[in-house]
Image (cartoon, rainbow, N blue to C red):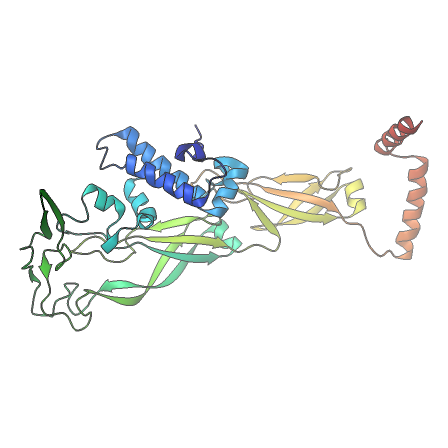
Length: 376
């Protein structure tokens, strides 16, 4: 059953971006997996809230959702559909803020202040990729150039001068925590000296100045599947920045932008194409050549075709990105009225005009009878 994204977050359809953000933040805290271990219902609500926020926080997706419902935002790989909590944290973790690199999830559930930092996943990155209409239909490979943090070649990511190692923090004795007593209250907070790492660097690496990472340019080849649409978000696992303390790399999120085509438009998996035909072709019928995404094709125009009439060419559309067949091409014909006539054309049309006045078509005759009834 399709979910109502506004109802999922508990907001009105006219809610502002800030109201939507606060509503999602509230639900994410309520149904977070750490607060609801082994609770499938809470996990589903956590994913549903993330999917709703993914759509309603994006102006373009929200507009399509308001107009077409879920069908407007689920044609392709974009528009929600998170498989697990890690996807959600990667996509929206930054919206929860938190100092020192800790998200609100970590600080609330004990992952930030109050414990020594262990291996942590690296930051996820975003990039934009522009492709042609044809590349979106058939798929392609693209090379992405980006600048990201990499482990320092000299110290191998330790941050310490080669030949030395980080030493146990003298302030917290390696625990990463400091205990503060105020009257009857005792609280624990992150050690100010080692920032929760439990170790400090006495002699910093000269190349990275103790950071353990350096900014470097990287080239990444990605495969874009056939059938992707505009605003599709692709997740490239493990192509983000390296983690801390041996943690895994983050992910790379590529947002696809499809260039408009000079002839074709896209509607889901269908391709739309407008073709001009002459009055005689529409009246007498004809076989015409029409462009398709794969080349020229044949289309039969039956006698009596009306301007704006649409014809369907099966399996000439876009392959479904999830493998569910292929769309069609919808050809809409429009009768082209000439602006200039040759003498021969004018003479023939004047003869036709006289014949049509003497013997009007059933449609024209019916309309004239309605007018006569209206004004008599």
